[in-house]
View 1 (spheres, rainbow, N blue to C red):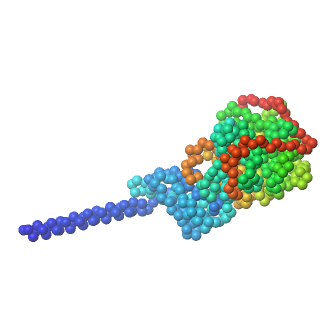
View 2: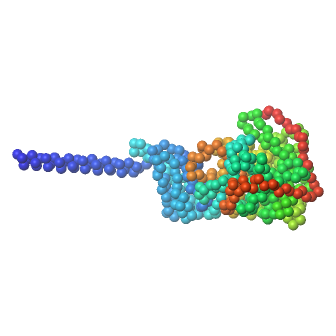
View 3: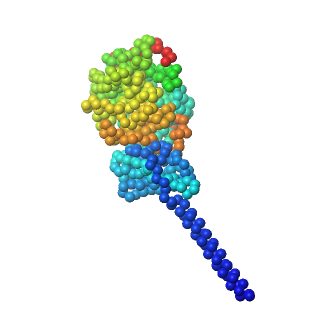
Length: 517
């Protein structure tokens, strides 16, 4: 009897063990296969933020981190390429961040190729969905390693917190070049570089520390550019490629406010003229003596060889003018640097003939193309929703609307040093805050789909209320920092001498229509 009970207990224990083992095996099998079921194939791409699908990107760009705006408890993301290299990311939040080293290696090995981003979402109940892959086209040409921009709150008078930032385009490193809070909150604007050179720049500062600060590598000189011969200060700058000259427009600018809710602020000139500053001799002169009275001139930009100065011009307004009728054409004027003299101006694009107005002309590094902003009237295109970028072939005169435009404002832009990339300010996100977008130029008539400057936090743009203003490519890191400007700010400014026969003249007491419309 004792033996029988022992034998029964042994069999019972064996059966119990087998049962437990079977249950454990079944559980492990179910768990291991939880995300291995065949996913439902979705005949669409996933919604992501930012939207990078179909963009053309440089091989040296920072990782394109993004948010997956789809339902799911977890996501599997895989970047695959034609050469067989791939990288994977798993996210439980929908936030996708790529490791910089792996990202750069994959893009560097696939120049001129198309890489795809495959996304699978997993949901409760052992269900998964596989989306149509996102495509990225990797260009063979790099983008310049740094981008410089002013960051501030959008509005007509938001001076309390302004910074000029230099940001790596190859990673997420960013640092301040200038902070206005260190200089009594004075407005800072119009940072400008000599042909993408981080060692040659200038900025304007208004307020108690006012002046134009010229940077030559690590040296800073504070200058007072306005002379008694100029009714307005030097405003929009353009460095001559020699580094010896800087062209400015001298503008008397006013603001008006629209009564219609779909419009915001209007900024326009009462008068403006082009002036030339000789950096070596500290002298200021008129650019074109015969045109200083007949036209308002603004937004200068040099050809890459320095032989032409491009700018926008409109007939000088009179009393009681309607600023909606002010239309600027694109013009250029030849320049002899040895004689410091200008020739006769010519119109390159007659925007007023088609009822439009031009602003922000920029000439490509090879000198064959000019990109400009075209809008309904005036020069302050950043508040014009209809503002778009156009490209004009200087050789044959053909002008086309660029494919990179959106339904919102596209305004300020600059070229990369190799002429293959354009960075431009666009309000396509919310219609209020401008963001820097990059576009690749396949040819004069063809651009790749633009993409926004990537951020380490892909949700930054949806939360951030500040605007990115005046983006400029530079070929290296700027050597000065905010404290360097503070040290120079108390210096007595170097005052400029006027030379030449002509004094600039403007309307000192002008009235304009201020109707509600």
